[in-house]
Length: 424
Image (cartoon, rainbow, N blue to C red):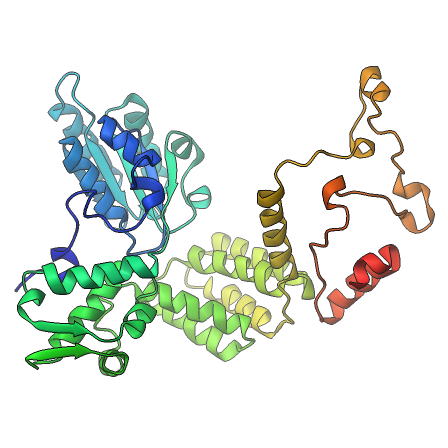
């Protein structure tokens, strides 16, 4: 039986590597380290199928150093120590440290991560970790502080189209078939920026036809996937599709669907903490100020799962999912912080107005620091109008209230305070 298409097309060099130009393109930070022949420990954070494992393998091959692999799903502390011992014994003086690649490092327990610390700190191994989860939450701080963090992005349309063209013209099996890509929209849509999933779908479509000349269209792809809904998900990436359906069901106020997708995750052996974290995110992002209690309940559900464990932990998770799905929705805080971040990136470090600055020294007072600041509690209603934004942005609006009963009250208070500024 031949290897899967995704494995046959796995790049062996950086020149063949598709995407992530911000990291491995000419002059990029990671490319410079690799070209210099020395790398420090780092963690690759990004969605599935964007080349984390491939990049680690290319680096090991390029540096001609021993390469050890551990999966956080199936490895324990003993496995970590065994690999470190082998790496230490097999290393020659003044030789580059062996690379230890840990896939799904976010699934490593604290004790497993602790067992890595000494080896990474002493340079016995160079750690490359791969994760689809935010390392700030999943990787212990001492280990994270010893590693650089590089963020990988979903592949762009042109990257995926280049990969498709490479598959039908360079793969040892597919190039023997007369394949023409007449339409690619369905292939790209179902792949979701995941190169592995894209190649799995292409392979499924090709295998489903015995035609001498295979013309791939969007309709053909859709029909093929409807007949084989799980076939293209060979590596279990449906995990990400199901969590997406779960969150979108909550956002769409459908408690039945939310419970269904939660049950799918539970039956599939999903980590309860993963579900709980997603509920906390949803409470802040999608319910927000329309029902601030949602975030409190989501945090309480997270704490309850940590305290009572499984299987009883499914009950507070279900309670939270139903509460979030049936709550009014607002993403005004989410949109507000995104707008504020973009504003900061566009306008740079605007100076803080003098009256808002502290004046702990006489010199600062003489320079006008804090001069003219009005203490709101000294005024009726604990409010007095004054400028809080930088001078250049004093008329900028960032937060826009949305139409839910709780948020309307907040908005009305702002109109009462600020008048026309909030009536825009």
